[in-house]
Every structure is written in C-alpha cells, then in structure tokens.
Length: 196
Image 1 (tube, one colour):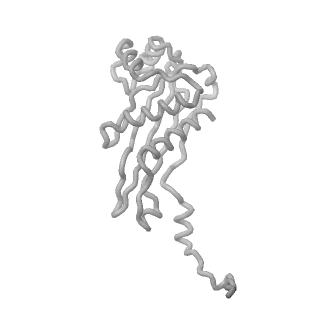
Image 2: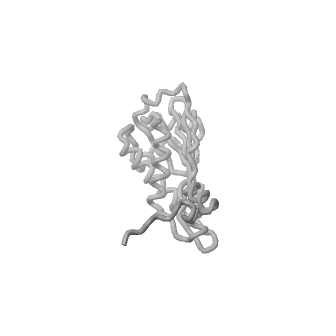
Image 3: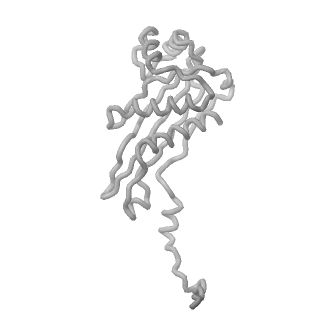
C-alpha cells in the first residue's frame, strides 16, 4: 500500500530555537590573524618552534601542542622545522633567560645561533576537558607568533579556539571530539592562516 505524503502544512516544523542552535554548530571560533605586508614569507626556510607558554590546567599540554604544531608545520613541506633538542641547545647557547618569551635581542641572537630565519612562540590558554552541567567536551585555545630573526619583530600572529561544549551538546548531551583531533584542528587552522 503506497503512502501519500502529508501536505506541507501538516508536517511538523523545526522550532526556531533548535534551528538557531544547529546553525551555531560548534564552539569553535575563527582564527584571528596579523600579517606583516612588507614581509617576504618565501624567504623563510628554517624555523625554530620555542616551548609554548602554558596557561592551561594540564602541565604537559603545552609540550603536546608544540609537538603537534611542529610536526604539522614540518609535514607541510613549506619550511624546515628544527628538532626540539637542537632548539633547546640553541636557547642555552644564546643565553635566552625565558625560553617561552624571549626578548627582541634574544630572538636575533637565537636566529644567529641556530641559523634560523624565523622563530615561533606560542601561548596555550586552554587545553583539555571542559565541563558544563552534565556535559563535557575537549577544547583548546591557542595563539602563536612568528618572529623574523634578522630584526626580532613579529611578522605574523594568529589565534584560534577549537572544540568545547556547543549549545546543542548542552541541550541534548553528548561528548566532543578526542583531544588529539581538537589539537590537530587548531594547529591546522593556524597553519592555513600562515600560508594564506
């Protein structure tokens, strides 16, 4: 027996507040960025990624995020990323007092010590599980800066937030993505902004 479709007027409509919640999607925010228009980014061949500042509750979060970011930058094939051990030795040789946030002069000296064209520093603001009522999800908030080593000035900066608890998850429950996936999404978005 064939079923006849109900007239459009008889179909239940999606309440406006659910449609709005679905349109909001996830808790991610677009990456904001700064690009120095006078900088020739094609001249950057070797990059040192410094240890990230960790403002998150996870003691190892900054190390994990730096590792993911460095690997994804290297995998892009656009630049050579110095190994973390070599960067650590360079920081000691250059006498950088605070490796997570060197001064302009220290960046220039570090560039000479490592033969690096640029240095990347980052700040991890949030990393890990976020909770609200009975819902939890993984989230990350990260900002990075690229310094040109001949002058020590910032030539690119960007930040992004990925993951977190969405309005739909608060409403209907459910968890978010695994932490590594959220971290890769954040790093990938930052790198897209760098290469645009």
